[in-house]
Length: 272
Image (tube, rainbow, N blue to C red; front, side, top):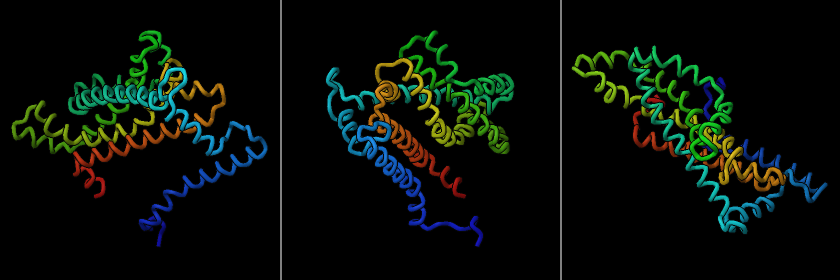
């Protein structure tokens, strides 16, 4: 039996999925124990008790100065910026991606420009955005939009281009105009890809958001991480990083479930 044809059972798949996480956890416990044995005040690898105390302080006790629950304040600020940026990016990418994918003239006009823009490092534009748009919310949202939109446009355009030409010809034979073909033939088939494309951009979107918050903000997960780093507060930084990861994973999972619920046939095609 070749390994390429070997499929693990359900239990084996679960064990294999858990194994890397368990290995990282064990390695951390060992490293933390060794460092704390040498120096009980060590801040680099705090104990789990230190994590629990920091989480309780940030999430369940009001801040002495502001009276806010800092973790939830930061989470709300970051998610508002993230979803605002992704929402704008989705709207732009869907329209421009369909135009490039459907219309040869628009492809000749916009495709080279979008391809070039997609190669610009978004973080290099951050100082320019702060200068032009100021240090408020607009520049942070704009960085997310600039960072993820060109990639999504190219992905959706390629998806539209790859649709079987026979479908377009049949729609034309039945009397459909360009508007009807776009809405009834192209759009339903690229929407599932839009969900997957959005899932792939969640990680980069978080990266751009944290970078923007670290430079100029008064609340947000990225802001808090860079604020406490000066105190080597790893007991706060590690939980914040894990919390960001959990938010990203949850968003990815919900988008995938939503895609399957709205377009169940897309899952059948994937498993075919």
